[in-house]
Length: 416
Image 1 (tube, helix red, strand yellow):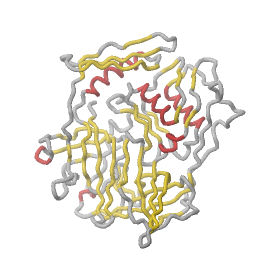
Image 2 (image 1 turned 90 degrees about the vertical axis):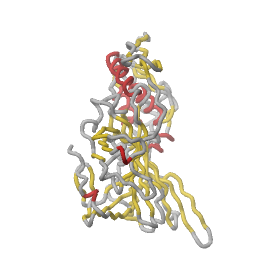
Image 3 (image 1 turned 135 degrees about the horizontal axis):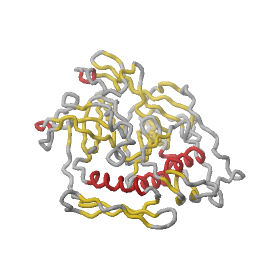
Image 4 (image 1 turned 60 degrees about the vertical axis):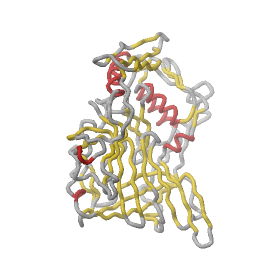
């Protein structure tokens, strides 16, 4: 995929309009595990009844929004959220109705959303979510209602299994199996997250002759599997389209990451927004830097024997000794490769880089980008030429009164 053409993003004027469409409520369902850890068909339907998204909204371009507040999301919080303010909250609005926040833009008099795939003349989704809570303020002169919209991760955190899953030969959950098969079974057979939301898998696909997971929320179980395959650093989140993405830093699985070899956009000095009063631009935090001298991972194999990777050292071997585990896997070669990459990942220098941009929605959570900076324009005197980073958080700051829209990306260094 070619880099986003940023020519129009650098034009002297930008204008925008935000609307939100209301879709049918999300009827999220979960089929629990049976008493013996089985998919007991006499208790639940497997998979649960589907909840497809109807293509046409119930109300298109809902009018009367007073304030959008801050719209954004992060990998750490598992997706996107926003608080919308409207004059009234109709009593017949159902719980968990779908909300599509959509954006139309004009750059230098030319309409169209600029993204990695070109220019879209229509609107683009800032994010899709579902209404979670509402508060009505009935003051005499100023009636208003605020309602919170969140990605489907909110449903995955609330819905839980009373028992765990056991994958073994001859069992209801068969083995040998792989991490991707475990996750796919949980999502496709025990929830109706799809087809409304798609599932993306970009973690190392460890092999198991047997595998056990304790009970808990869907989100926590998926996080457990992702961490198990990513040395405790799995990412489980819903992207802007509300698709569930399970991945890790491109430093840990570069061969699997969808954009590490095809960065979405080049953020150069002409594109970065330096606000009046010295704000904005590129902020490179002064973070405590702790050298990791060595890394070793341990695992428990299906036959209950233990395995430890070789100890991987930095060039001088100085710094903290990191030992993580035990993880569940029979894939000792994958664990060795993961340990070696983890050493480099833990020694990455730059984290939490914040880049302020004018109106820009080309980047999604988890996307890789290129960043070029001039040392005279940042707080560290650092110069980079097309250095690669991964987006871990996005904030869209909307000022309704001054009609200003800014985008702030939080980036993590990619070292491979």
